Length: 146
Image (cartoon, rainbow, N blue to C red; front, side):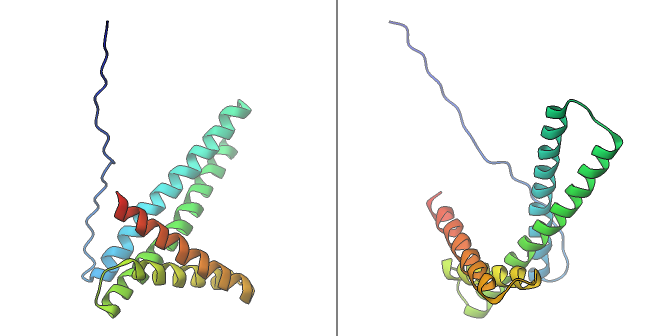
């Protein structure tokens, strides 16, 4: 009886950007900004390309709109990532230990700051802080599993 086999390996791509700002906090913050900002810009570009292909036509206006959206999304999500990475590193330095609680506190503070900067009401700011802490903690626990 014929048999077949499949063997393979899957590894995640590694993007290492080395920027020395002279301070570990700044290094991590800039690194987070660049990496997540690039991901957000790529997502915005892919989304707009899908809409352009679906529509069946491309114009100078579409290209300009896509470029503006890429810059806006990249800057926004890059900033959020930079704030989160900085907060988590700050918690690690203050507490003197590296564990999931740093992610939880960093995520909560990031959610609070981003929401407060968006001029949301008090209840929305608290909910966003809880959400930020929960997402960061879940991501940290998933990181422990893999």
